[in-house]
Image (cartoon, rainbow, N blue to C red; front, side, top):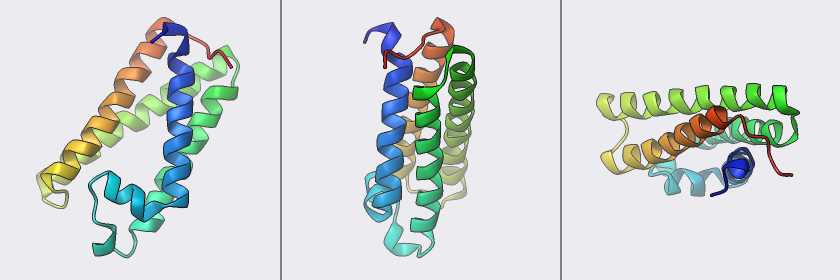
Length: 126
């Protein structure tokens, strides 16, 4: 991956996940190893997550250099919190191991991409 494309990749991934989570929360929940059929409130919660990622992605793609750094930092903070939430969910027993691993993989990937983007001081080629 070209280092200059890291923020754009982050932005587009967030927008994609955000749209999918908002438009098809039950499908998204199953893809992430959750049990939306077992929790009637999960579509609402997935839509909250979805709009967050959509906003973070759009902000990352449209911001100028200084503001983009703030959007990337906010996204990184969310991804770090998502890693912690997956670990806490597994430890507390309300996330099954396969779901927790899927959530950890997704959030950890976001952390890694965010760190790379912030370390390189990249701006998106949009």
